[in-house]
Length: 388
Image (cartoon, rainbow, N blue to C red):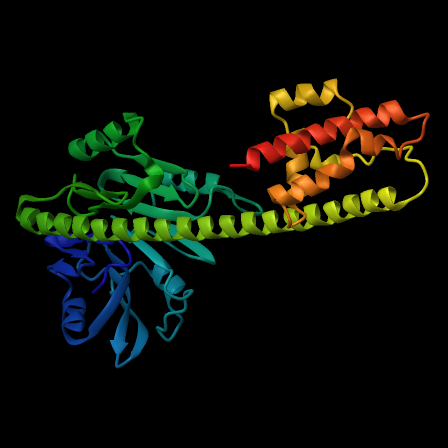
């Protein structure tokens, strides 16, 4: 069975269930059923302190079909039975997302996506869960992990990371472990995947944190089984860690491709805009040179093109009247699609100060000739930079 949910449940008389699957001293009904059918995945396994108090929720294979299956012990608290089953004993909860935790003295805590029930739980746990609720719904999210143990011990963690626990000092090992976690500034309660308390035998627990850490206290009789359980968790953790890393790498690769595509699309859009600006500017210049009327206005480069922010260029733009540097001019001219040394030399001729000056209005000649001299000089720079 592939582990989909992290499960480790303690039961009476040394019973436990771990969804590797691995189990010990299961109730006869559960043991016989698991021995006869193909179980695909166990979503919930809970033991009370009595031999006939248990709840299992799982899927079983019937050919190629997966069937939902429930086994309820006769000793389940009546209030829990009423929530789980109808009068005919049919399971009525919401799909496979039901969670049931059984504790001492017929205590239980159960929930699914649409409702929640509990009975005889420690006061601290009830207050914590009530604080996660508001009249309009969950404030800190519904429960994600709940554990009930001996002597009023409990642990609870919400979907949004709120947590509460109480472990009396009489449970020395469990208390010491949880207090150490609480003092460890690097420990994240929200990183827990499992907390399970033994409701029958004091001071036994299992905690699974993140992808790698398994901690707990179990009886000497269960040490060998617990070691195998820990190794199985660790093996599965490595598998999940590898899967998570692969998924993260695939996600990063997809995001990089999307970013590259978006960048390419932006560049293509900017190039199209730049090409349009060149056509407009070039057409304006051609019309000016063909006209028999004296030139009275200089055809400055489009403002959007003159965006070079190099410090030396910014100084030059403030010192001269052209308001464009060689980088701005080069960017616009390259949008022509004809950029080359030969083409630059041909285009440069129109801006020669003497030739350009003869077309200017006498009243504006000095000012316009100065601007054409600046543009002509930039053409010279561009030709020099392109020449071998």
